[in-house]
Length: 240
Ligand SMILES: [Zn+2]
Image 1 (cartoon, rainbow, N blue to C red):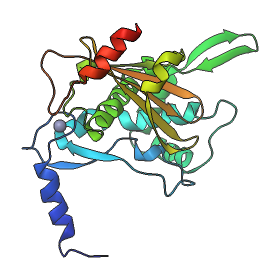
Image 2 (image 1 turned 120 degrees about the vertical axis):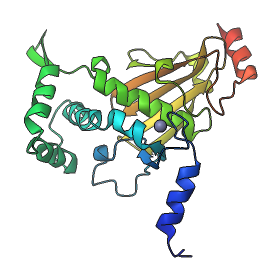
Image 3 (image 1 turned 45 degrees about the vertical axis):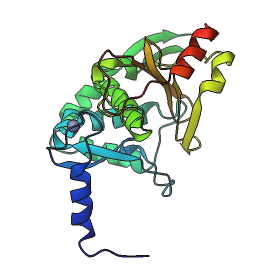
Image 4 (image 1 turned 60 degrees about the vertical axis):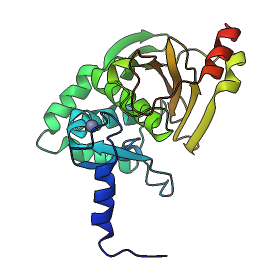
C-alpha cells in the first residue's frame, strides 16, 4: 500500500478537474457526492459499496434539504410489516430532535394519506409523487448515468421517475444490465435504448420491494460524453 503525503489535497485537485456529474461544471469546487444517500446504508452492511460521483457545491445545495426527507420516507416504508430499528431509524429520530426537527416531522406527516383497505384504514406514503423524493430519485438516475459513462450533466428535465408498477416484458429483459449493492438493500438495472425518444431506461430497487423506474428522454442537444447506441436503438425498434 502506498501512502501519498497530502493525499487529501491531491484528491481535491483531481476532483476539481472532473466535471460535476449533474451540471458538468469544472469551475465550482467539487466534493464526492454519494449516489445512494449515505443515511440509507444500514450498519449491518459495512462493506456495501458506496458509489460516488463528482458533485459541485451548487448542485449539492439543490438536494441537501431533500435528502433527510427522502431518508425519512424510505425508512418508513422500508419494511411494510415492521419499523426498521437500526442506525437509520436512530439517525431519523436524532434529526427530528434538531432545530429543524419540527419542520421535518411536519413535512413527513403532510405526506401521509389515509386510505381505506380491506383490512381497514391505513396510512400510505407515495414517494414518487413527493417532489423532494422524486428529486432524489432523478438525481440517483442521473448520477448512475454519469457513473457508467452514458452521459454527464444529463438535464434533470429529461428524467422521469415513478413507481414501477409493471414487469419488464420478457423480450426486453436481456437488454438489462444489473448491479447489486447488497441483496435486499439496493439494486439497479439499465437498458440503453438510444432511439429518437429514449436515451435509457433504469430500474432502481430499495429494500425487497420498493422499485422505481427512471426514463431518460433523448435530447436534441446531447449531454457531455453522451453516446447513442444505434445498434441497440435499431434492436429496440425491431422488437416493437
Ligand atoms: Zn453541478
